[in-house]
Length: 236
Image 1: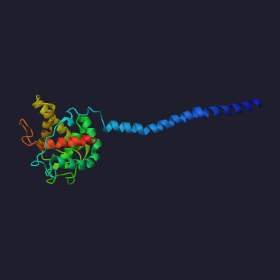
Image 2: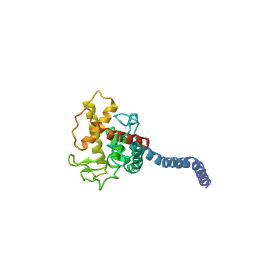
Image 3: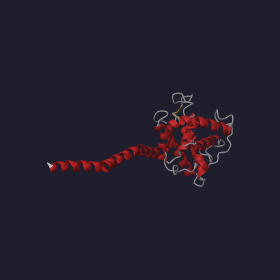
Image 4: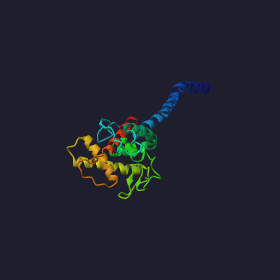
């Protein structure tokens, strides 16, 4: 009987020792693991939508100089006040662009393209969807956020889908690489500007063989660059 009571007493002493140490340690580890879950999820999301600074293979958008935009060739509502109006429209467009931020950044990462440049073309072409009627322009020929012309290209995906963004962004990359191949002596910023103009021509199937793919109209590329720099400063 004494042996039994001694065993019971030893068991109670053992529990007393283990409770503050082993049990609390296990529970503490579990609590720490649980509290780490949101941080790990946030880290994973950051890796998904915010890649490293070496995002673009085509130069630094912020290093480009965008001259004052001429009102004569810029589409409304930018025409009235040039750069000031462009910034106001970009400020309004960025609210709509947030909806597409993750797919834009995913496409940009896959194509080694600056996401701000994709966002800028979406803003330039469709005001991030504001100017569209069920995904179409007023003439129902140009489709989607990035306004691909269905008369010359088969549109992929729905008008605001990642598939559409990828199709048109791939055309932008092709335009930049075309400028690199045709004009290897151009500086990177000239090649990038030329690629933006080539994109404008490519989505409408306009054949461009001149030295300057923009011709005398640099308004489009300047508008895109101005928007891209704005969106870059605001998280794209």
